[in-house]
Image 1 (cartoon, rainbow, N blue to C red):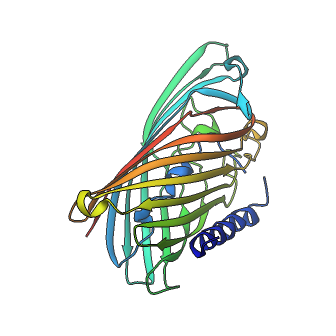
Image 2 (image 1 turned 60 degrees about the vertical axis):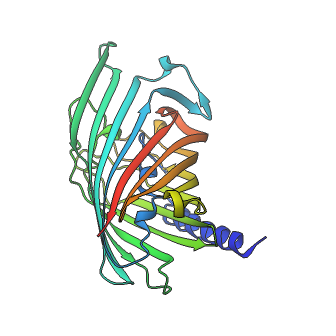
Length: 308
């Protein structure tokens, strides 16, 4: 095994152990949108200064699953959850060791479900979600190839919107801690990275609902040979997403929590003087859900970033 592969395996095991050890209660959520927060190379800085990005992500949860396979739609009262996520973010590296990062998300979510009388009803809301504030430390090596991320997800999004269940609300109604890390490596014509992020709700909200912990891990490679002439860098990732069961009297532990593995091809394009475009498609190759849940057969993610 080459030294690069040994390093990649070691970092992956360390990050996975961090997530598994920190979340000893049981993993949850119907959405799984945490997969959009990792694997983006603009969140792994290589120089000081300001970086801003605008990200769009989309998922359409229209397949009912039970365990590791599809199940009849009649076995789930929810029929479709379609969401567009818009995220405005900024990261400022004060120097080559310390930085700060903020993300402000905006959701457009449509839900089609079964009403109390058995009829099919729908609801749609456009609203801010829970914003994130994080610190970044990259002082482990001069090239900033290893970093630790830590911070909070704040209860800025609503969690009492009409027509939505607690696990489909844009906001958690509680503060969550965020802890993650990453490591990058570079060879002559290609590079690699591993990145993980763990989220943990610090308390149950006023509706007696506590979202389960989530842990997301990305392991990716990028090929740089064609970039000097075209500005195009192909990427390929494996993204693992784990959610624990929800808690509290308003939670539904029997039908929340999952494990998913995605193969994610993508591309980065250096457009013009610090402006970069990134897009990928996440295709699930393994899914396991607790109870009956709606899942998306694919997810799409795209962003534009600018280094000042």
